[in-house]
Each structure stands twice: as C-alpha cells, then as structure tokens.
Length: 292
Image (tube, rainbow, N blue to C red; front, side, top):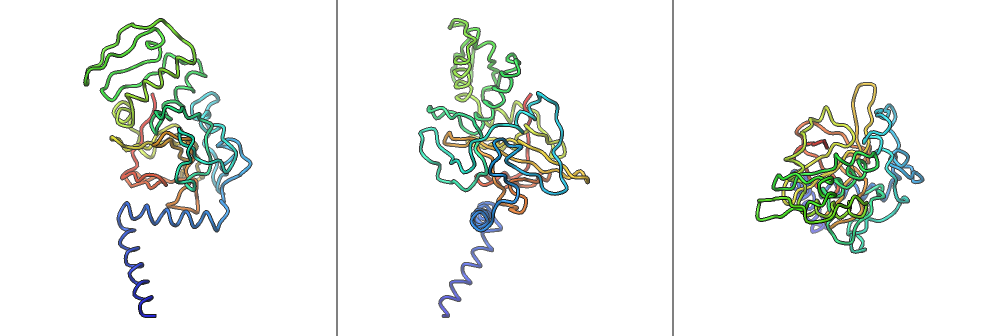
C-alpha cells in the first residue's frame, strides 16, 4: 500500500512540474482534451453542419461579427467541410497519428507531392479566394529570400532563376493562364515561401484588431501558422475565434479543438503577448499577421 501511495505522490509531483513548462502544459492540455472528448459531447458542435458557420454553434450571449458579402471573411466563415468524423489524411493517403485534435476537416484538396504544408495551405486558400473573385492580379507572395513572385508574371511565362539568395526572373515559358498552370505556380510558392516569409512580408496585427482571415504565426524553419476562420462578440465587446491549420507532413486542413479551455471549445480567446496553446503547437505569444 505504501508503494502505491509513493507512486501516486511521484505522479502528482511530476504533473505539477510539467504543467509549469510549455511542453508540459501541452501534455496536460492534451490529456484534458482527450478525456473531455471521450466523456462529453461537444457543446458547440453541430455534427450535421457542412460549413464552418453551420458546424460550430455560438455560445450563449454571443453573435457572429458581420462582414460584407464577397469578403474573404465570409468566404472563410462559410467554407465547406467534410462530413463530421472525417479523419486527417496525409498527402500519401496515410492517417495522421493524432485524430482527436479537430472538430472539422475543410474541403481543401491535398496534393500528393507533399509540398502543401501549414503556410502553403493558407496561401492556397487565399489564392483560390482571389481567383474566384476575379482578382487574379493580386495573387503573389514573397519568397523567403524576399523576392516577390506574382501569378500574373508566372502566367506570362516568367520563371525564377535561383542562385543562393539571389533570384532573377526570366521569360522562359509560353503564356498560360489556365487553372492547371495556376496550381503549378502554387507549387513553386510552396517550395520557396513559408511561415518566415509570410511573417516578414505581411502586416502585424494586435489582438484587439484581429478579424477573420488573420493568422497566428510563429516564424521560423520550422515555424507554424494557423488562420482565424470565424469571429463572435458579446455585448461587452469580448470576442472569441475559431482556428484552422494545415500541418507537416502535408495533410487535410482542420478546424482545431481548444484543449486549453474545453468549456468553450472549439472557440478561442486571445490576450496580447500571452502564449497560445493549440493541440499541435505552442505559440509563445499571440502574434498575428494579415494578408494584403
């Protein structure tokens, strides 16, 4: 009996130590989230919903922040989803090892080349929105080197010649404005852009100004990035948000649960310069960027 008591004390001490470190807190949050998923039906999830706005319900006292018809914000809020319970599938058709992190899978195809990872998936979503809005001239991203690569130039036949950090563009292909060529352009972007280039290129946003489409980012190689796909507010002006992510290896884009606060999951609250724990990543501060 004494041996079991000692073992229990050791476990409790380890738990208390771990929860005070970022990695330890992620572990404890995962345990809490996994247990909650087993013993409790999600409070804010409609399993029949086929879009973000119909899958995730609003907590009492909140309402969705209104955005204009045709805006990127409405595009994301109404993004179509796979049926509830769909698994996260990697680019090679294997199942991702963690299947309890998400409440939804977005209908974003995953190419088999393995290139479409976390930042890439978000650049694809943004680019497809601009394409559908006939704003194709706005499609373009910086390489990590800082050189801008636009769809319009690529469609005209210009291709990059890369030597170290030096990039020059030369007309080496025939003009091709097709959708198939557009996805070849995105493969090029996936290869030479990422979280670091997006962080360096895009406008930084404070927590009080977050809106749908803004991205929580930790720049680096590797870093990570997640995108806000819905936004709600109460009478006091307090806001909550939904987060979605692509990941490494290249895989389905998913809507994330909130293991840090399971009572509001999958909604999140953010505080300026405070850490954010999501199921797959620890952000040491709430740092956001916004597409142009």
